Amino acid sequence: LAAVAATLKGWQFKPSGTEGYRTAEVTLGGVDTDAISSKTFEVNTVPGLHFIGEVLDVTGQLGGFNFQWAWASGWCTGLAL
Image 1: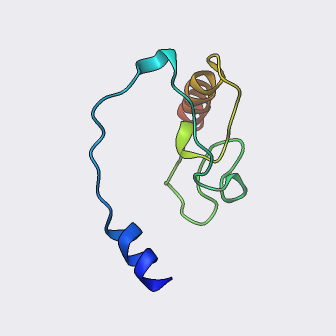
Image 2 (image 1 turned 90 degrees about the horizontal axis):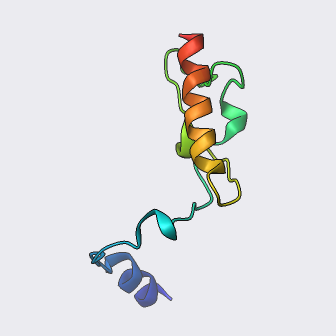
């Protein structure tokens, strides 16, 4: 098990390209929204630090929903500043 872990940890690769926005998808994970103010997007424990968009653990359906989330959360943060 340790050997497998060491092999996977040391595995390096370089992507050769992308398929662009036509097939782009979002992955799960990111900053936990419980740690963020829903009004200002400021980190509850670090005044002055804000997280917006896809860095947050928010996942939407394909078709522009994630872009809309990124733009809307940025706009809301801007208003709060």
